[in-house]
Image (cartoon, chains in turn blue, red):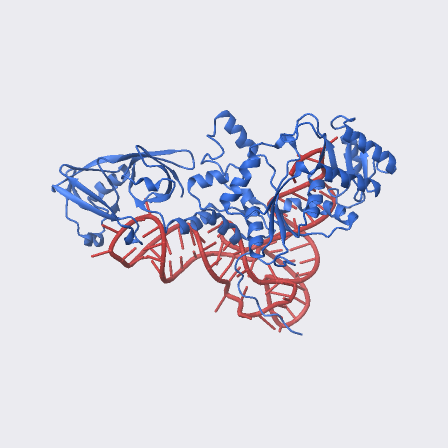
Amino acid sequence: MLKREKTERRVGLPELPNMERGKVVMRFAPGPSGPLHLGHTRVAILNDDYCRNYDGKFINRMEDTNPDKIDPNAYDMIPEDLEWLGVKVHETVVQSDRFDIYYDVARQLINMGKAYVCTCPAEDWRALKEKGQPCPHHYEDVATTMDKFEKMLAGDYEEEKAIFVVKTDLKHPNPAIRDFVGLRIVKSTPHPLKGDRYCVYPMMNFSVAIDDHFLGLTHVLRGKDHLNNTQRQAYLFDYFGWKVPHYTHYGLVSVPDAILKTSTVGKGIKTGEYSGWDDVRLGTVRALAKRGFRPEAIRNYWVDCGIKETDVEFSWDNIYAYNKAIVDKTANRYFFVWDPVPLQICGVNELHSRAPRHPDHPELGNREFQLNSPIVIHVVEKDLNTAMEAGKVRLKDLGNVEFRSGKALYQGNDLAVLKEGYRIIHWVPDNCTPATVIMPTGERKDGFVETMPKEEEGKVVQFERFGFVKVEKVAPKMLAYFTH
RNA sequence: GCUCCCGUAGUGUAGUCCGGCCAAUCAUGAAGCCCUCUCGAGGCUUCGACUCGGGUUCAAAUCCCGACGGGAGCACCA
């Protein structure tokens, strides 16, 4: 017997079974209730990653079969978010375009004796199912059932008065698997795209199974909250003899300190609590973009996270690290002084400062300042207090000062003082740009920033000793969003 | 209540299928040090985990049983 060699440490995602190059078809299936948030990005990126690695086809399927939970803008926002994430969509499918397919499959099921139309009160039907017993309509003949189904389609039943049920196995030990609703009646809410053209809507389990088959899905990634749904849908595949795609269920993600719930956010936007879907306090893709996250960082995070069935807790620290690795290379450095207090430097008539735009890339040039008497700069209040206690401080790229009876005396520009335990702080010249940084909490940090070139707008820069920020506007007042 | 899934450091992850090379990988984090200049980057050091209990075996993170813990579903939502 041969033993398999121990495998090398895996890089990237694990192989999925039967991954055939060029033949893989996968899908991302969001409900168009709003733009994408952090939670969506995992499965979108994982699907995309597999599709890219195997020359597969990525289908974006809008699951808009519950008119109560549709935001019409989401039909545009979701593709925008996917594009920003770097997800390559090969085909877009909208479920509300496919009602005829669902109805057709429903009729076939009726003819096969695998479905019935139930007109019991909802509670009765549910209670019988709980006990593993059929409702009176379960065994109605094909003609009767078909007749009732056509009446449903014709609008003869009111909402909740009839449902189309797929038979599974009423004796199934798991109550969650027994007969499930395939189609229901919706009349009270018009469909944002289709108006009142349809009154019979498929349930997720019904439309998903049908679409997964007819769209030729080979591999499906879904949250493990769908574990039972996969079993229910298996009955449909079995009845029609369809080839079952390979399912991978991944664990639930909890995102600490994030506002994700689409309905909550939607409400908050209406009341003015949030400025919009891109309010930086939110966990939406557009908020992350606004804050200065690179899509590659989000991708690297999820690929590294893998696709196990274990529940995971999202780690901001980890994703910050991925993003930092990307933006640090290109982020120019600037001094931003929050809680500013003025400081006059005595004992010198003029000073010249030269600081590199990027410490690792001297070729990018320097920021230069000429300071003339009286020399007044601004520093962070807390830094000044600490410095005065210490009695001395190094002003980065400018010079050393000592404090004597409350005055800051210039002590030259020798870096050797660092050996003597001088702390380094940053500063800005007296006449520079007022600045505001918006934190992810919504809090504002006001102060001054050295004057920045217009090209920095839209880019991530580093405010030294503060953090990375994405610059929105450089003048007349600088505005930026804190990244991390 | 019924059914199903999952348990490796603070967090994520590799290893689990096919027991030994695992006194357990990598990343992140924290602490500290180095660096002529950041609370950044880089370099170095340290901290920290196989949920528990039995069993099988020369050998168990890995196989078996049980317990415990966590999660999901049992919708005319997705």
